[in-house]
Length: 269
Image 1 (cartoon, rainbow, N blue to C red):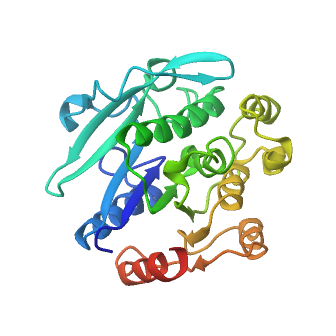
Image 2: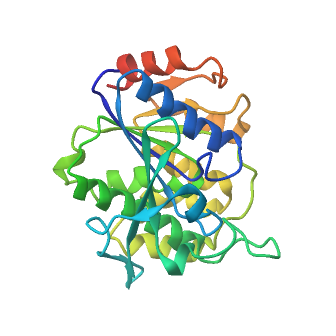
């Protein structure tokens, strides 16, 4: 993997959020690729539950300052960065006071999903791309983990399809076994994405409105798929099978390195 450029984009990432199947693999995979000589960049949202002082986050002024248009609103983009102790790896955090300065990740104090999770996902996708453009860092592989990051493949394939920085980039999505929860209002979500001149026929999976719909959007716009969970829903399994893209079967956390490297080098690139 020496000198290959891999952009890792995740909804969750240990040690900044509690360990889950997503957050653990979103940390372990870039760590292993880093050890194998790859150049990596890691991105996640800067949720309000992340303790900035403990994790030593600081704003990167040269990368902050632009506004992203989300559903006809100008939303300021703030970029923060932190280093993972002992690993010499930096993590870039996509931040905005309106979307992320709250003391929970996806739901309110009553356990109800935030009404603006759709806009948060759009903002995160655009924020990652615009920051990578400012870094002038063209990735060979873009590897996506988790549903908050699920719009990134769609936006790269459609909204940013003419951007030369990503012309040679290959997108990989890790598919995890999500619960089938209603994430957002599907009609509003579709309307907000269409505002970015993305055609409605690209948004058919959103008509279901559950957790799998966003994963389907990511899968449909990826160049390769990794099964991140040992068991996936029948719905997702069938969805993956109908696509003619390379698929890597599940490998546990303690036995994924060689399989992922071979997949990256021989099936993705």
